[in-house]
Length: 203
Image 1 (cartoon, rainbow, N blue to C red):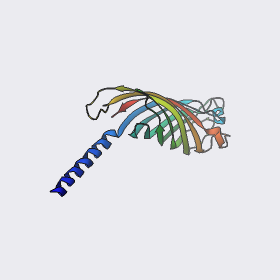
Image 2: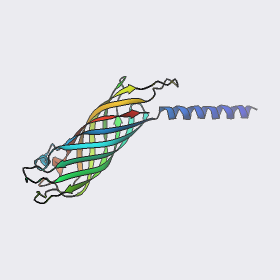
Image 3: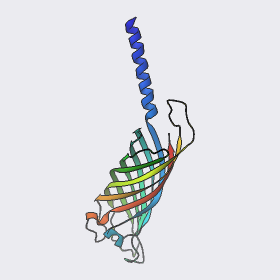
Image 4: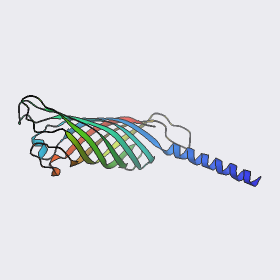
């Protein structure tokens, strides 16, 4: 009899713990759009362009989360090199860790991680031909904020229900590997800076 009671208590406790852990794990989905530019020597051979992305985030704790995303960008060679500009597309993936407090509905954070992408140069006849196709490796570091707009409140352990997220972030991409970019010889000259607005939801 005692063994049966202990088994019942143990199973009940595990079920409660599992349900609490599941309730605490938050899922975020966001879309992203903004600008991408080059702060170093690469600015002499490229123009600022547009960037976009789709983000999937998991937050096991309120102050710590992991984010996986698709990242895309488009920019051109500078017309000072040639009146005919080559078009450049980047497509890749990014994984970052986000750390930050939650100050009510305002949620600032810092982020850092790794990213890989592929540069596809759409060369045109008469273009400068200074950029090459190839793989890029980056170390993104940045900061941003989200504003949480609750859609509903659920009466389970005081948890907040689904919310809209509206935010902005800035990211500095340290280029760890890059194919030829004009006369830029690696170093920090090929680094990128991105600024974006994010819109999504948390569940």
